[in-house]
Image (cartoon, rainbow, N blue to C red; front, side, top):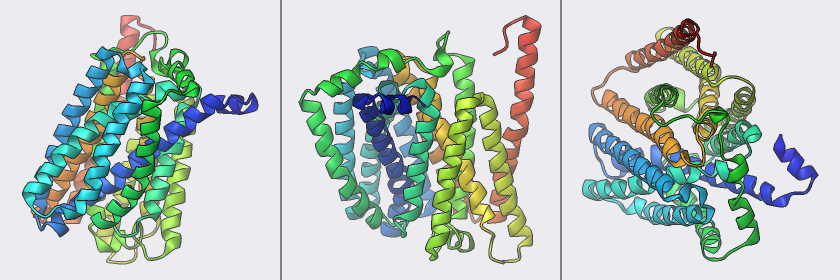
Length: 423
């Protein structure tokens, strides 16, 4: 790793960049995993008393608004040159976190559906701006060689903490934890935004060496290319399958209280550690293998995982589910999350990082996650059985797992027929 070279030669400024990136992305992803995805459902259904269908519509609106805000912000950052101006990005991130802090403190006091919708609209705008700002930090702080490993650290840490704390997935718990964590972040960013530091000036020039992504050498990936949009579709499928299955699983007591919310701390620790192991394995694979085959791993893991849940529902007869069920689930989640952190910056240059990360994370991440969240809540609302629901999810995962190698084979044959170099 390049990081070891920096440590050996005592180059503390680049090392500081690693710390800033890991801290910012880990905190941001933990916030989205817990407060936004789980906390808002609790706020809408338990605190306000809305039905699952009504909450699903609001969550769908959150996804769409976040996507629009992300793409608009990313395109604006590229056109204004803000994607390569580190101080500007610190100021934008300060704005995002200050708004999110106010929203986080206010969330437990939201009492009506109208207030809930207004809260979600403001939250969407902040999330949308935060996507290109935070994901584009990779061109400022992380060399190409280390991106898979650093992405693995961010994914592993986020899931490790989320698996252990808070135990109760309630909006009050999330609000307290996140508010306490955000205050020091606001202070640090405010100082970095208004005062000039030599080490920040040095970090701000690193994109000249680190900025061009791994898959943009020697030819940059264009925004309208089949490569970019093909990977967005694949990642959309991954996020969609994950949330569609997970949100029904965690509503089922026999599965949630024997895994993610088990009263036994050793079970939750097992899940947390498995997340870390899965992320580190994904980091190694990302660094050494082609991205296409990593997607095959992810779809294969999801298909196998949902198949286990379907078999347990059909033949388990209400017995305690084995830990292999959540174990394979968290492995799949850690795999694709690591891939998601590293992939979009590696498909970008300093001139396209804002747009590409906004499209990648906005469409494949947020839109897919909350579209599937809305569909999962609708499925629950119409009382579709868990067995039927997971059977559909499993079929979708198998469809992607089988289709991907076929499409890769067809693509390769097309390249050979055309006499093009093998990509």
